[in-house]
Length: 161
Image (cartoon, rainbow, N blue to C red; front, side, top):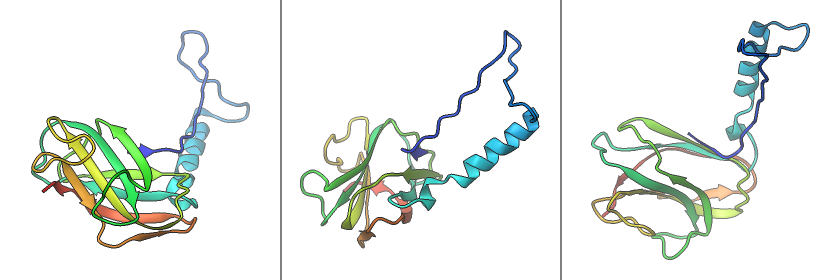
């Protein structure tokens, strides 16, 4: 999963026992419940300036990924660099037919943009998807970025032509 707003949690251990320091008045079960509730309540997708959705590889997907680019363009087909780069992921791990969740926070793009996703494979392109090797997706309709959250839903990647 891609998540660009990270929450950090620290725990210290005592001696070599592997037990955690637990605040006075709580049990380890209470701490586990509190941590689970916190994780559930803090979805980036509920926040303003977030972009969320999922990416699906075809059932026939095989090979080794090199990188994935998730970007916004004012018009399609893409010509030149994106108007806004949402994410660059090195060697993303896809499972054929399963969703790859995307959660990106602090997206400051404003206006109407098309979503473009490119997954570059070994032996494929570098700046532009290579036909028959790399995978891509481009939205048919633009998304409105006005400071709220944007959910692009589930997108299906296809071999680049």
